[in-house]
Each structure stands twice: as C-alpha cells, then as structure tokens.
Amino acid sequence: MGAVPFLRILAPLALVAGLVTACGHSSSSGSGGSIGDASSTTLQLRPVAARYAQDTSQGQEQLGPQTPKDLVDAMKGYDCTSQPAEVQGKLMECDAARNVFLLDAPLITGGVSSAKALKIGSSHQWYVKVVFDKEAAATLSQAVDSSLGSELAVVLDGKVLTAVVVDPGLKDGHLGITGDLDQQQASTLAGQVNGA
Image 1 (cartoon, rainbow, N blue to C red):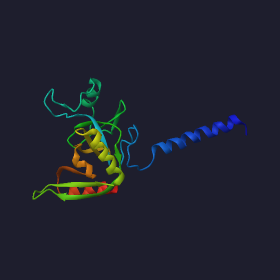
Image 2: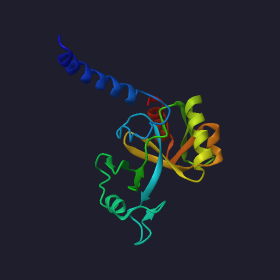
Image 3: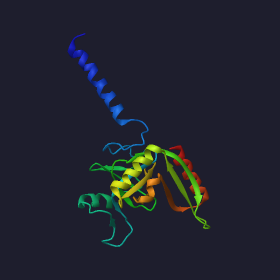
Image 4: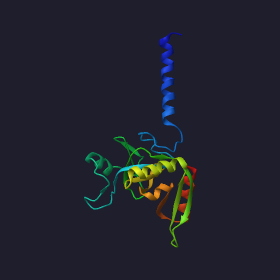
C-alpha cells in the first residue's frame, strides 16, 4: 500500500478519534467553549448571557446584560415548544414560564452526587436540593470567585429548570431547584436529576 492511499484511510480515522476525545462522555467540568448537547439528559449549569420574558410590558421584556438587537429579536421570535436552538454560538432554551434564555457553554455537566426532594418549612411547597461531587463543587466554587452576581441556568432535558444568581452560598457545592412544586413533582424531579 502506497503512502497516499494509507493517508486517505488514516486521516479520517484520526479525525474521528480526535472528535471522540474532544467530546468526552460524562465530564463534570466545563466544555471548553463548546455549546454542548442542547438536549442533554444530564444536568447542566450554564452561564446566562441574556434572558427574555415574553409576557411583560413593553420595554421591560429583556433582562440581563445589554444584548445586541439581532439576538433580542431572535429571542422574541423563539417558539418555546421547539427544540433548543443555537444562535451565534449561544444556546437558546426556555423555562416552564416561557422565558427565553440565551446560554453559554456548560460550566458543569453532570457531577451530581445526590438530589433530594425537601419540604419548604411548614408550607405545602417543595424543592430539590442538589449536591455536587467534589470536582463539580470545585468548579462551582471557582465560578463564585470569578462570576459573583451573574446567573447560572440549571438545565435538564433541553429545558431551563431555574436560574440561580452566583453567590457565596454556592461555594459549598449544592443548590436548590425551586418552583411551584408539590411533593410528587419534587420527588419526580429529584429522581430525574439523580438519574441524569
């Protein structure tokens, strides 16, 4: 076999091997700038670049840092019933309230040590306490040091579950997923997060 035919076989194999290595499987560290899998069944924490609330008064709909008009227009026109979309290297996804989030590459993918449904005081509402493993907790702690005051979206199955403000309370490696959850909903969500 000559050098040219050998290279024709070797080059695609090297490319595939490089892609597999670069993509990884279930890392709890950041993805190095890649937008990542939009429909991941693994829990992700993604920095929020912008947020658009569709059901607000005129002029009050865009929340977060100043966003270019073309991105705001894309967020305004986004159908929350559709699959997550990539726009200018950012991921567009919605939460249950149909707020549109523009998200950066995942800071953490996976890395969940446990998720447990807990009752909020004496009310009838529940939340899910998520505890991260050592590696993911260290990444979260670094985010507190470098991104204090910014937002992180908690994403599962292509939907934003909640967004949390990065504050010193996250340094201990856990966070709460809140909402209008009853015991059954919180237990189901905890099961999904644990299984992710």
